[in-house]
Amino acid sequence: MTEQDVHDTIVVIDDDYAMRLSCEQILGKSGYGVRSYEDGARGLEGVAELKPSLVVVDLKMPGLSGIEVIPRIHEIDPGIVIVVITGYATIGTAVDAMKAGAYDFLPKPFSPDELRLIVRRGLERRRLVAESQQAEIERELMKRRFVTFVSHQLKTPLVAVHQFLEVLQRLGDNADASAKRREWTERCLVRTTEMRTLINNWLTLSQLGGGTLSRHRVDLDVRELLAHVVGEHAESAARQDIRLELTPGVPLPVHGDRTCLSVLFENLIANAVKYNRPGGSVRVEGTVDSGEVVVAVTDTGLGIPAGDLPYLFDEFYRVRRSGDETLTGTGLGLPISRRVALEMGGAIEVESTEGAGSTFRVRLPSCPAPSSKTEPIR
Image 1 (cartoon, rainbow, N blue to C red):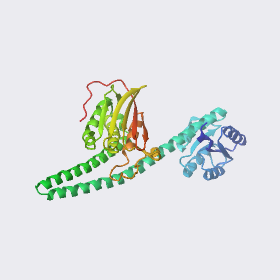
Image 2: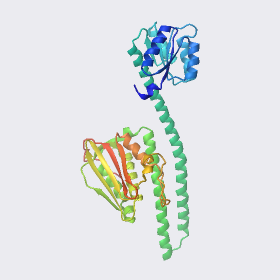
Image 3: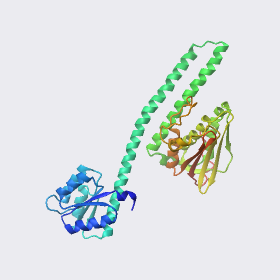
Image 4: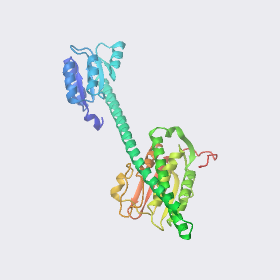
């Protein structure tokens, strides 16, 4: 029995006193809170008051029958699981009960184990449905927050780029203008990079939320992805006097979505460069350990305060430190990276010491080495 079971309330509605007593004893000994009622009208009052997780109801009762009680229970709470019991079990009565909204059907007489089993199954179904609904609510809220956030974040750099281009348009052709042109062009590139990151994050979230990740998986060598991402960030790292290196290693074969994995490692390597210090380093290393591909991204940067570590993978969460005001970000890179790793059956871990740097370690299930004919990244 789980901890959740102990908090589940069950209502029994049956006109047979011996049956009510038997159900109370069987389910009570299993740790459930049980209340019983002798007819449909009183049972409905009890359901309205208690809001139970599950109701056991007899089909044949004086007054309101079980078939009449079932839809009224669902009017009170459609999430309540209903198990029908009856001494007049036929295929027809079972079908009628299911059509009315019952979850399951148990003919009398039944054993204590049969009752416990059907109740456990019913409560497990209720929990799964509730979890699914909650996940859907959270996804919808996240989408709304993200649309609002992205709309604002895209508008800001677009306005800035427009202003930068207006300045460039008014510059002359003298030597001073040439230096200014380089400066404003660089600012435009920074802002358009921000927009590209936002769009990539948006597309990745859509792919994860739409359930398309599993349909786009191929056999690939992660070394290829890492070499591509490291190459993309080599110039940026050099400008900041940061040594960015990819340690040569063994093949890193996985079965996964190429685009989502690229976003995962792009986020980790970009952060390692962004939150580093002049003269620092970023080392990217891949190994195979106990059937897992392990990729570690280690930097000698600012590190993460211990108080921020528990929230690091929460959507929109950003570490706030004095001196970081010029560092832009969405607070979505790490949450997306974690979701990609989890979708592929893996995990992502972080070790960090404030002021001394961080290591992000991605673990993914390995697979047989892919063919040497894998498509190059473009």
